[in-house]
Every structure is written in C-alpha cells, then in structure tokens.
Amino acid sequence: NAGVMQNPRHLVRRRGQEARLRCSPMKGHSHVYWYRQLPEEGLKFMVYLQKENIIDESGMPKERFSAEFPKEGPSILRIQQVVRGDSAAYFCASSPPSGSIYEQYFGPGTRLTVT
Amino acid sequence: SQKIEQNSEALNIQEGKTATLTCNYTNYSPAYLQWYRQDPGRGPVFLLLIRENEKEKRKERLKVTFDTTLKQSLFHITASQPADSATYLCALPQGSSNTGKLIFGQGTTLQVKP
Image (cartoon, rainbow over the protein chains, first blue to last red):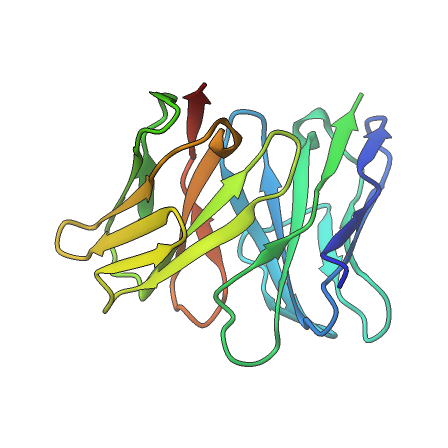
C-alpha cells in the first residue's frame, strides 16, 4: 500500500520561473493538505483540498500561489514567478474520506531551491 | 491568536531512560491533539492522537497525556533507544476541528545516546 507520493523530491528554479509540485495521496484518500516548512521554522498550513474543490486556502499567499486537486491525477501546488523567499520544503498530506480526518499521512516533501 | 509552544532546546538523554516532551497551547480549546515524529529530510509521521475527553493514551513505549485545564500535553517515550532520536512535533486543529487544518509547534529534537 503505497504512501503519499510527492515529486519531484528536489526542484531548483531561477527567480521568475514557475514551480510545479505534485502530490499523489494514499490510495482511497480524498483529502489533501499542503504545508510549507521554512528553514528553522515549523510546518505552516497552506491549503486543504478535496477532489475538484478547495476547502480552505487561508494559509496560501494571495499572489503567485495556487493549488488544485482534479478529478483525475495528482494534486498540484503551483508557484508562479518564484522568489528566493519561496525556498522551503513543501509537504503534502492526505487523509481518508470518511470517519476521522484527524490523522494526516505526509509525503517525503519537495525541497524547492530558488537561485 | 492560537499559539503552540514546544521546548526549542534539544533534549539529550541516555538510552533506557524516559524522555518527556512538553507541548503548551494558548487561546483556545482544541477537540484533540496529535504528536508526530520527523526525521531529517523526511515528512512527519503520525504517532498518536488524544481527544479532549481523554486524559492519557498509550501505544507501545509511547504515552501521551492531555490536561485541558493546564492547556498542556506531555509526550513520554519509555526505555528510550538511539533509534528514537528525531524531532517530535505537537499539532492541534486550527479553528473548527472539522477542517483538518493543523497548526504545528516548532518541534523538540530528542537525542538518545547509547
């Protein structure tokens, strides 16, 4: 039973380019969460999605960041026109559709470096 | 605003001893609290969840307590082993517990020496 998968594991972008981070939740999970972890800081919630719906994006920066979780395929976190301050580890987590949404299962993360 | 505090100083203990980590929170009353483990370069791994009406929960060598009066959770690892060395994160639901949105503490790094 594969866990949460994220790719790429490492991503290097120059300032101004776009970054696309992918997350495939665990089989049977329909809730996806994205978190960002800056160096020496804790995990910060960004967005919570269900299939084809954004449930809570209160942690997303207002500009340049967007997320989607289409009916088919992985969830995508997209960062346009990246800046150095976007360099961080981005983690995706998933939880099952029914019963408890409490436990979240995290992927290995994508480490974004902006040069 | 809701705030979580974990001891930012690393905890160093000898193998076989009990490690105790603390999580304090302010400005709200969460329905539950979770503990995660994070190893360097990896994603957090869920360990335990304790609900507001539970005083204590155990899983193998792990024990979590939840004191809603003190607004504090204690996380214990008994008979600690070097393999327990990691950063341990406390997490609480932000706002409504139905959103699944978690806020995390900074984490406490545990180092178990053989």
